[in-house]
Image: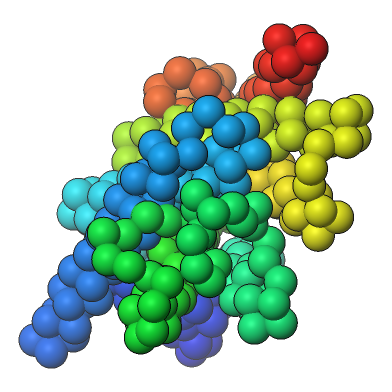
Amino acid sequence: MDRSNGYNDLEWAIGLNRRMLKLVGLWPQNSTISYEVIFSKFCLLFNIITLIFVLTIPALASLIRVWGDMILMIDNLQYTLPLLITILKVSIMWCKREALSPLIDMVIKDWTKVKMEEERNVMLKQARITRILAMCGGFMIFLTLLITFSSLFFGLTLRHVTNLTDPGKPLPLQTYYLHDVSKSPQFELTFFTQGIAVTISGLSYTAVDNFLGLLLLHICGQIENLHLRLLNLGKNSNFIATLKFNVKDHIRLISSIQIIDNTFNLMLLGLIFFFGVLFCLQGFLIINVLKQGENLTLLHFIWYISANVCVLLHMCLYCAIGEFLVTQSEKIHSATYEYLWYTLEPKAAKHLILVMLRAKKPLYITAGKTFPMTMATFCNLLKTSAGYVSVLLANRD
């Protein structure tokens, strides 16, 4: 057993995601240092103001102006929908911070407590996946910002620019402001403000996703450790005390999943809606261009395909982690049923019934308390979205 590396492991496991959330003022755990509390509130306020007033409201105003033009609407929605989802994520993280704080304490306690080397290796394996996802999410946001803003300096734009959307120089996002952005220095100031706002919103979007992944994968690691302890249950001399500890640990993990589901189920429902709408519209546009040769440049066409693939992989990742949670929880069910209970005393064997009954129901997170986030849900969503694409194409013909 080793405790010396616990705090180092904790920093390695959650440090990256914690720093990302603190930059946008969304880290759920309250600090005891006054200046950190003030800084967190300032970051959150700045995040909300830029997200709503610099990006979302102007983007919605532009959407109303271009309503009826399919290409311009899709060009607008590929940014507006993520902005609306980001507002939902920020609102949930802010409103549910008191419910999420005990989960942070649980993660800290799990990492810092004394544990077997085998259990530590399981936790490190899950934390490594979390770090890779966080770095990949941050890299994708950085790459998107780099391509979007750097292309403008070379006279290129990834948007479909018209006199209606951009009477002067094109901005990174399709937006409509009350002031004249075609003149200097209004254009430069608006361009710079959009750059800051898009960076903050992108960081908020991916940081909340990474935080959800961190919690779920950590719990998956704890379930795997519980599974290992149940398999070795017969090797302990005090069977009742060991089983009691494992039952309490199982109840703790079940409660944690319930808190996560209660907190993020509305966000996941919004993400399913976001994926369905954007996949339908972009799929319709891509197929329509291939069939009828609509007026769209090769650069725009490649950008739409890349955005569609990115959204597809993002949704697949949510469902894959949910599927992994279900698979891990089913291991508890298998371990209790396969245990050699007939070698125990009857009074001791009957205590396994509690674990058997509760482990019979798999653990999963849901979208809006309706759809379990599994690969089966992803396949059904993909099939339904593809069906709507065919309906749009039939109506266009």
